[in-house]
Image 1 (cartoon, rainbow, N blue to C red):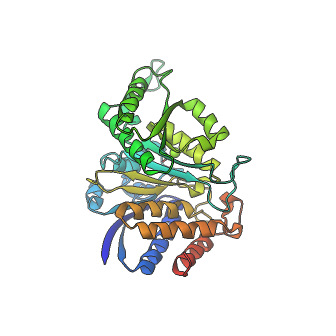
Image 2: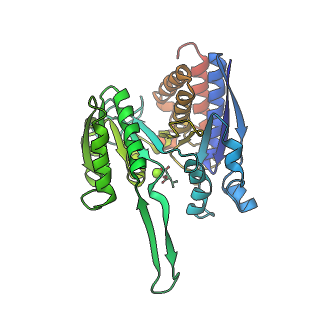
Image 3: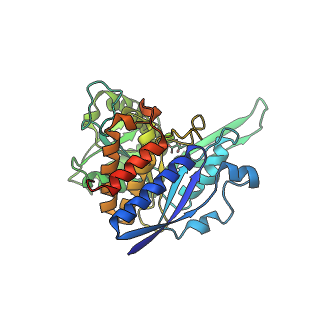
Length: 358
Ligand code: IPM
Ligand code: MG
């Protein structure tokens, strides 16, 4: 029996609800499979922890989770803690030192879910966005001086390194190669940003030569929003900088029906550090505690975590169970226009897993 240790960090708001639901579903999968076991260690880090201690996680927090096989993360952000504190104190404080430089965001229209795009029913929209997750606009470089004075100055400097850009392109080309269409779109803004984005383009073209079997093209980020909405079927794998992909992935999730179903993996592909898996929806304080958060984003995220640790069969089974459940509109939560609860959706996914037919 293979045994994996997972660090669960539910964080804030609905993160707590969807991670609890995800753990139930993962336990059902392990029971059904019989070949592996998941041991969860729970960490109560986040904004409540911050209000009690002044820190989002303990000083030795990373040491406590560095030997786990994966991190299952909920959401971070609370109305009464500044966002840049909660983000840099927890999520980025894990992603950056653990060098989780490849952020992977798959998007598909799941059965039973209606895209806001007219004429788009399903197979036309099947993308995976690769987000550079360690530098670029989120490098954290900048400063602010002369606060409040007329001469106040503030900068956020985007940093691109050859090593960082090469490795994300290699990752994206390899991922594109593993998919049916072997098609990669590189997103850029090198018409306006004439240094780093031009280097980005050049390195993209260089790395492309290592992948002659992958077709690729290049899109300016503004035009990309149009292509995603008007010609979704022309896209497959997409690679973009940290901020561009942040924005495009919200668009992608909405075009696929709801932010509530979208999943993310923050990968350290070399496996020197654990990778972190999280739904992309955030803490959603407006619905927290009501029991109506959509757990599908956390479930889809769990499939990515299972795949990463090597439990492909369980990952595929969970994806089939998710699709079985989304196909039934009576099991749609309010973000999808339904009235189902987190509990009902979780029970249905568990039942599908333990039933004979997925
Ligand atoms: C995401 C989120 C975060 C980001 C927020 C919470 C800072 O929007 O994961 O896409 O911008 O990285
Ligand atoms: Mg985002």
